[in-house]
Amino acid sequence: MMRRLTVLAVLVGAVASLFAAAATTARTAPRSSKGVTLRLVAYSTPKPVMAVLIKAFQKTAAGQGVSFTQSYGSSGSQARALAAGQPADIAFLSTGLDIDTVAAAGLISKDWAAAPYNGIAADSQVVFVVRKGNPKNIQTWADLVKPGVQVVTPDPFTSGSAKWNILAAYGAQRKAGKTDKQAVAYVQKLFKNVVEQDSSGANALTTFLSGKGDVLLTYESEAIAARLAGDPVQFVVPNPTMLIQLPMVPLLASQNLGTAQAFIKWIHTTQAQEILARGGYQPVEKKALAKYHWKFLPKGRALFSISDKLFGGWLKANKTWFDLSTGRMVAIEKAVGGPTT
Figure 1 (cartoon, rainbow, N blue to C red):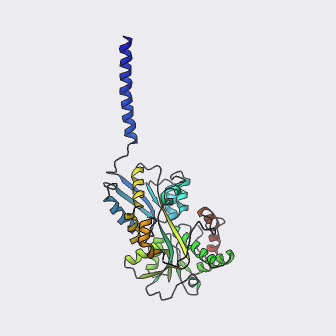
Figure 2 (cartoon, helix red, strand yellow):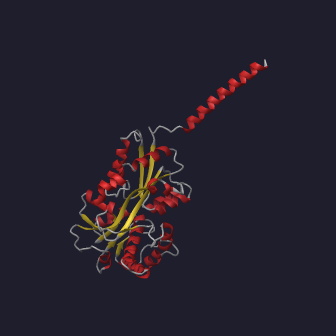
């Protein structure tokens, strides 16, 4: 009798173990991507190229059956919305600082930059968009502060694009041998010529295309997209200028985390990076960059980045320039009558 009970107990235990293993497998097995909807929250300017990328991804094995909802806006505003709880699976923002804002809320891994390619989906650089024919012959940073030159650039307290523009203007002066004080004075002189500060890079382009201003400071990718759209503009890449690094990361709470990660992994394939290159973005993947290197980085072009000792990374640069209490831009905007919040 005892032997029968022992055998029965063993059988029951084995069956229970099988059910437990099946349940564990069901919980840990990757979910099929079919029927998944990924929620993309992005900064304002990559909307055209994202439409192409999403269609191409949906034709891959990983992307079959995957649909997307898309939200575009100024990078700083999008970061704050995400931190406040806006549902999302993927964040594609214009600065590492904005990704850090979301990470500080516990929604993105704080070591997101340890991901492949440092979490960067693509690069760009700060350029001058001018009217067709460049009637004011704007070629250099010095041209932006000449009397009568009207400049359009976004609001640095909402737009990542504006932050890149300001740091590029300052950094170019320092690279030219100016002191810190002289370079800050240049930025203030530049902002005396600014006639419009929209909430985002995309809105600033719309303002410029409406006829306001002689020059728009923006991403090279935005300038190329405008030309591809047939807008009557051209652009000048100043020398030196600033490298723009554009992060794309998954949100940890995503119920479709595996699919979000698969999409970001695909973004770094040669196929996707070439789509980005054709859309005006500098690839980060080696093969695509080698193919399009001539387009974005011709010989003699000098670039500096946010990691340059002039800035010391985004946290230090943000504190120095964009802090709402002590940042340099608050004082500059007050001096020229621009936005301060």
